Length: 93
Image (cartoon, rainbow, N blue to C red):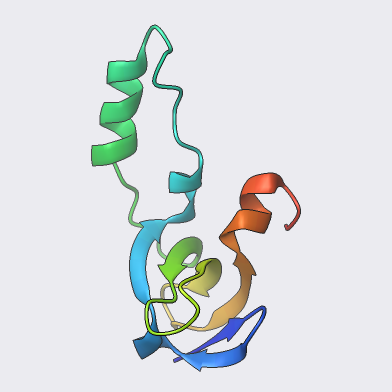
């Protein structure tokens, strides 16, 4: 499976480590009144979607960047990849 790295071009998926759902970029506020409940959900509760899904991948064997990869979990087709820093800033779709 090739991942289209936005800076380096197509890279083999063996260069990357998979973290999970890209919603992990939306870390809850640790100072909020309901922080314990929100962190419980953030750390322990995950969906297991079938179909198109956005995931976090770490380029461990390369430039050590974090990517948000859009992938179809049924076919493993990669639909796109963006730098996680751009997604977090709101600079990418």
